[in-house]
Length: 348
Image 1 (cartoon, one colour):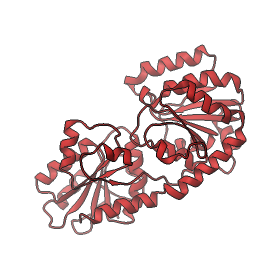
Image 2: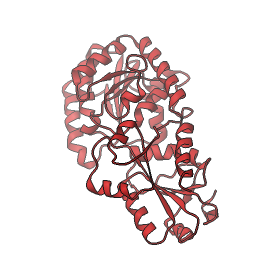
Image 3: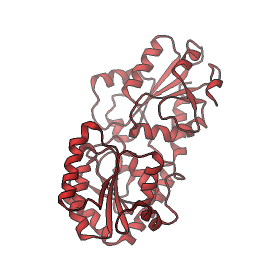
């Protein structure tokens, strides 16, 4: 549905993305929005619009002002909730939905905004437990056609230009919350023992995190591993997807997370998983079968969990196959979109 076709008559919902920087929230929103648009007449408002859903400009909001039939405003951040509340007060016929991924007690402003929502979606039972009202649990899904194993993982690895034969990855913005330092510390201990492996951190280094990233680079240089531990910086989405296919093992090292979409992205790509018990790790991982769980921030535990997989890449490959099967069965985008659309239908 092109932007010009938008009207008060043919729109059921608005998916706002009012955030300039690309983030995990943006990624999850982008993936499910086209599937959602197959179920309801939805339009995307804001940056990073994906293919498969109509785009809406701020000026297009005037087309739905004071119409009689309500439509959904689905917020995922505080600023989007604030805009929804304000617009409704000014006459826009919004039913307000908020998706909460946080696994912590909310600030007073978030609690105030949540009370003004018509429906709440939580991305896990853990996130739901921090809400002071009823919520529908809808776990994130992943596009298993896009996030898929390569036809030839050795050839995919060779494209990376990294030395050796296998790669271990850790994705997300380089910062302490993501456990980037835990990953680097573990790699500095393990890579000298396993010369066939290299490591990659895929993610942006923001200006405020530059001192943190520089310390990591000093550690890497001190260990003589500059060619085998690479920090890529921010990449295009397609290139990030390709990096998953180059991996044999994925290390999810976050100290805390809302959900942790990279968990299921890596699993969908058929990559063996070692994950800290943060975000949805315990909900999506069958410990010892589709991945290995470790305490957050524990370098020794991460080393102990990674080493058997590095010692036996065939075992890592088998774990990756089981991980993909689990995601295909339980964490599809279609299932996520169906459940979100069902929440919408209770309101409009």
